[in-house]
Structures are given as C-alpha cells and as structure tokens.
Image (cartoon, rainbow, N blue to C red; front, side, top):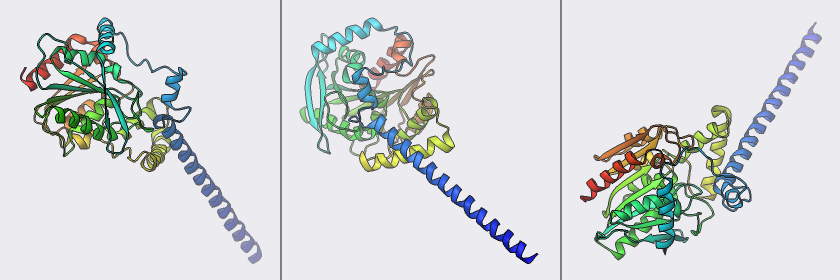
Length: 344
C-alpha cells in the first residue's frame, strides 16, 4: 500500500508539473501573441514608412477612407472652397522643436474689408491633408481672418515618420502660433480642428506657454485620449475583445510607441490638457460617429476648465460630418461663437 501511495503521489506531482508547464507555455504564447498584435497595430496605424500602413495603403489606393458619414448637404460649398484654396494658398514652413521641417499653407482674407490682426489655424485629421480644411478656412477667410492650414507631422509635405496623434502636434502648433506672433505681435488667433486636428487643438490649449494671442478654440469630433481612441477602434472596427485581447495588445502598442515615437497612448490626453484651459471653447460632435466615440464630447466638455465653453450636438452626423449634415445650424453656431469671442 505504501508503494502505491508513493507512486500515486509521484504521478500527481508530475501531472502538476506538466499542467504548470502547459499553463506557462500558454501564458508565454498569449503574451507573445499580444506583443505581436500590438507591434503590428503600431506599424499599421503610426508608421508611415511601413508598406502596409494605413497611410501607405491610402496613397496606393488599396483602401478608401471609411464612409462613416452620409449625405454631403454642403457639396457645392466644399467644391467652391477647394477651388479657392488651390488658387489662394501660399507655402510656409517652420522647424519643429525636434528638428522636423513642417509645411503649411497660408490663405489671405477673402472679403472686401479684411480685419487687421485676425488669424485662424485650421488642423486636419488623421491621414488627412490641409485641403480637407478648405471649407472651414474659407468661412473664416470670409470673416476677415488670415488662415493657416498646417500639414501635421507625417502628413502631406511635412516631415515625420510617426504621426503625433495630437500630442506631438501640440508643440508643433505652439511653433505655428509663435510664427504668427513674431510677424504680428498684435495677432488674435483662433484654433480650429477636426478629428485628430481637434484633439491637437485641445491638447494645445492646456500648454503652460500658450501665447496670450490665442483667443478661442473650436474642436470638432476630437477624442479624449489616444488610448481611448484606439480602444474604441479595437473593439468597434477590429472586433477585439476588450479584456483579454484589446487591452493587452494596446499595452504592447503603448510600449512600442513610447520607445519608437516618443509618447505614450495614455499620456496623449485631451482630458488632462483641457483641465488647464482658460480660453473660450466650442465643442462639436455628431451622434452617429462610428470612428470617434460620440461620448467624447461630454467628457471633453466636462474636463474643460474654461469658464466660457459651449457645445453643439449634431443628431445623425457621422465622423467629421457635422458641417455637412447640418450646415445651417453648424455655421450659425460657429460664426456666432467666433463673433462673440472676437468682438466682431
């Protein structure tokens, strides 16, 4: 009996070792899988030189930008604004704090009586380019503003391998603002952005060295943080289960982004920056946005420390489609906000 008990105990210990080994191998495999997914996500989303990146595939025409939108009720305005943009644009460049040559387009006021010292900076979204901001730029130019439409790093003619997702762009925007102020110390500046450009604007307004020349800001469908944005896309677009796949993969992507691009996904937070905002702000979002969580509007609005803030919810508008879905209410709100804050 004693021998049988000893043999039984031996087999039990062996079974436990085998099970532990199997679990360890599974854990290692799981960690390795998530690391691989995270690294691939980083290259696909943020490495513009990766042959299969979102940027590269869009340039090659392999994929089309997602139609998360609907009817363009301002199609004629978009066409006219694009033609004006191409005819009126003037090149301008700066060097970023980390040595990149950044490119933008300057557009003169398009009205009979241009207003002195008024400037607007209009920021495009992820994988976009400055001409996508043509209708916004033209509206402000018709109000008498000189308009700057920068190409964010890694986009159009601006240098940079890795897009800043708003976080690195906030320092680039400070550079563009300083360029204006150096040429016109009495400048009064409006910041305006859509999608990633909106988040860049929100992240900029919280900078401790934001020049006093910045009078107001408008954000249209910006996200709360890069982590939140990628988590929303991981679940909604790539259908990764949040707890056991999306979160670990994003943690690995975050580690790669910190090491390679120089910023963390959680660090790049509109919410934290808005807690230091003091200028008047207008927040806009469409309820049918499938790319940026519509709940970002209320979270960003609540985080904003400014005493002068407004928000506009556009029912049925998809991503970056608020102006096209309800142009009348959109521009009535935007122009009213600009006139009020600039005293026009």
